[in-house]
Structure formats: structure tokens, C-alpha cells
Length: 296
Image 1 (cartoon, rainbow, N blue to C red):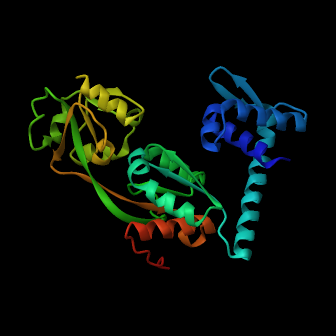
Image 2 (image 1 turned 90 degrees about the vertical axis):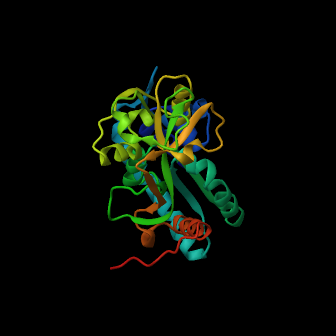
């Protein structure tokens, strides 16, 4: 069985669409479709049902899916074993992170790392904290750059912090103020990014016992900022998201001041695949993080 076809099938099944699978694997949607069709022709039956909104597993696909996942796991074990024997680092590293970290923190680290380790492929999923939690828990992401995840057993290496800010339209009463009272979120029209599920924002509001008045939800922070600029409400987000974006808004810190701690999360650095471990150690060194052995 062709491993690329198998990856296309499993990823399309997991993501529910050829488009999403293509983004993760570096193919066009039609390319993923052709790979899956090739696997179906090889096996002699249909694996995925194509629908207008995506794809779903057929009965045969549901039966074959766990075998395909096991096949891919064996491929990963094979490469890891070869890596350990040869003393070389090869493989794939899947990183889940915020878009702000992906844009401002990771590019130089990844560039230097891949220059030194051209056989290691880096994949990045820019997403929300809630989805990062799921990606790491499921093993689809090898590590994460974000605020601390909820699982206390994960290895966590903090490297910095990012303050939370209010994004206000220019005509807002607090647009020229030194800070924005977070208590006002009870009555303001709040525009919430991450489809209304921004954990970092919700944690700040929960800390002060605030039930926000959420007027609109968006997927992207940049969309939320544009909506603020249009006078539809205000936004609360971490400052890193707002850097380098030219918008006609007022961005000021919260009162009381709030921040999120940023770090590298990996389920267990000691048992991580060699390529993953090498990247974590490399990134930690570049970010000035001292990796201490895990206490038994």
C-alpha cells in the first residue's frame, strides 16, 4: 500500500474534507482526492463518501480506518528506529500554536533549525487554544507553543509572557485612556475571536467574575479587529496578535493588568521522537529556556 495515499485517506477522514487535508499535507484538494481515489482503486471499494460540505467514511472506510492508522504508526516507528540506529535526526514535527507566535516567534527558529536539519519536516497548525489541547491530546500535534495547557502531566517550558489588551474603535470613550477597565466587558458589545471559544480571553474574564456581553464571534483575530474598527464592538486579546497589523483602532492594556504566560508544551520530552526532542531543545535554547530533567 502506498504510504502517501494512506496519509491522504486518514487525514481527509480526520479533517472531514479534502481541502483541510490538503493544507496539512501540502496538496491541493484535487491532489488529495486523486490520492484517495488511487487507494480506493487499489483496494477495490470506496473509502470516503464525497458530499458538498466535505467527506465522511463509508462502512468499508470505517472498517479500514484503524488499520490505516496502525500502518502509519508503523511507518513512524520505522523512521524513529532508523534514526536512533544511524544517529541522525529524520522525521516530521507537527507544531500547534497561535497565529501570533507562528508569525513572530517561530519563523527564525524554524529557518535556522531546518538549515541544520534538512531531513526534518516541520508542519504547523495555527489554531485556538482549545483545538491545541485536542491536537496534543490526540497525538496529532507533537508539541505546542501557547499558554499552558490543562493537562498537568505535560512537560511545560515557559519562555515569556504576553499582556492582554483591549482593542477599541477610535471613537470609544476609553480610546485615549491609559487602560481599559475589564469590568466594562459586562455591558460592552464584545467581539470574540476563535469562534467565541478563546480560552485565554475567557480565563481573564472568569478571573474577575465577568459574564461578557458577546455580540459577535469570528474565526480569525484579524477579522475581529476589523469589526472593532467598523464600530461593531470591542475586542479583548493578547497583544502579540495585534503587532504589525495596521488598523485604525486604539489598543490599550487592561485594568487590572492581565497577561498570559507563553511556553513550549510537549507531552513527555524524554520519550518524544528524536526529531521532536531535537526541535524542542533547539527552540528552547534560542528562546533562552533552560530544560531541567523531569523529576521522578
